[in-house]
Picture 1: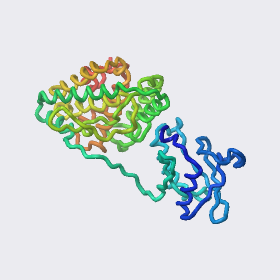
Picture 2: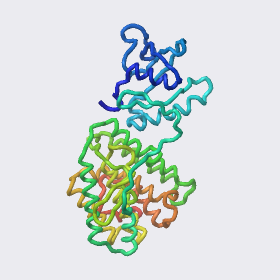
Picture 3: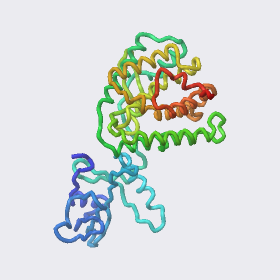
Picture 4: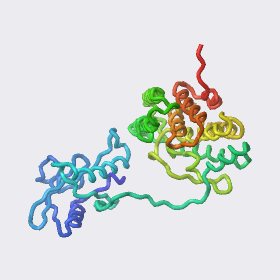
Length: 371
């Protein structure tokens, strides 16, 4: 039984209302909102259709309240976190609009079927354990500065490729969630449109016409990829060098998994591989040398561990998204105009490709020739 399916009995509702009122509340009947509260169905376990109307007695008076649960659907509520965010937003918004029904409390449903109040909460924080190590970005800065890599650097690339190939091998059947991930890639505040909106108006390296074209091309990719729900796999979701911690050898830990458990493997592959390009651009203006070798090694190792002929036909919008992040003057204000210009050009170019060739990255950085 999942946490969404945990049973809620009338006695649990009574205990919850009693705690809320500070004195005994006796549940008299329950029914789905809009239905009669009489007969055999009057006292029943929590339903998952309409909101639940609760008729109860407090201090000899009959009172009525409604218990609402946000249901999973394809309109922005595909994940548990979406539904929880809706409850949080409703609780803090309902009471500020004249004539609106009043929100009395927020509650969580425990695995034991008990309701517990969290209406007093003002924020939600996450407590994790501590993991030692240094971010993989430190390695890339060193390699960028020295122009050299070591045998340990090569071992670490293999370890990263093997890790992603392993987690991506776990697949999940959920077309609804697949469509959501594609929609978030293009339209979410952390996705492509959120990034294009973050560029300042009149920014000379990113004219509005170019950003609009990127959005249009990315949305075309969303439609192209919608039928490929079978690709939905276990992902990290933000597998960049600052979220990977190495200690002394090739063993590592990861931080800050983002945007849910399931997605497109190209998300993780693009997030890591574009950073070899990013650091190399800052060194020499192109992908080459030690960082270019590690880039090529990752691709070869990953695809040998998890053959995926479709990868080069789906990765384009994820590469464009990550390029927009790295080129953003808000996220990376100190990089040179040349690096920023090439990243933006890369974002536009890859979106026009039917097949992405990791061996042709430098060609995607140059202006297209005509005639």
